[in-house]
Image (cartoon, rainbow, N blue to C red; front, top):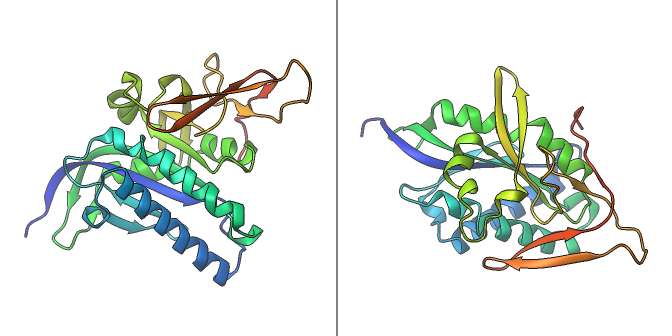
Length: 242
């Protein structure tokens, strides 16, 4: 079997603050992450066994099968993933709680006879996964939020901006990232957080003060996705690296 070039959608996920937990805890969170990813893919109509997997050490890279709609990698997959991580974290100890950064991209990759994948889109995916805005937004977010998501400009153009069912374009905010030799615009989203569309970045929610003026409104949209909006102060911090 010769090497072929194929257009594929791809996802990468990395566990926040995975270092220093010890071998036992690290092995446990790796197992949990793999399990919740597999369940999330299957419940999103994407056959896990048909995906190409890559080990990233403290995360995974998943290349979706041919013909899968890219929108499924956002909805319902991201919702399914964050719900499962929240359920795990409710009963997990500090050493085994999991929050993740997720990156999405698509492009032509070389697929080898043994299932290996190479190509520029995989390099872009790695830079998106390591993007400082996503690291900082997740670090500044409440512990109840379990993920930050960065999608490439290409992925956003073909999926998010159209407002397909279950995807709210206004909850994605443009950021500029520079990682190693790669500089590009991308789109940042904090699943389950309040956002401020006036700014070019995700607005990190702060605890609401207990006052008559403070309120939180949850609006259900799509197939079980919850978007939260509210009144109160929101702070944006996108400088530095955690």
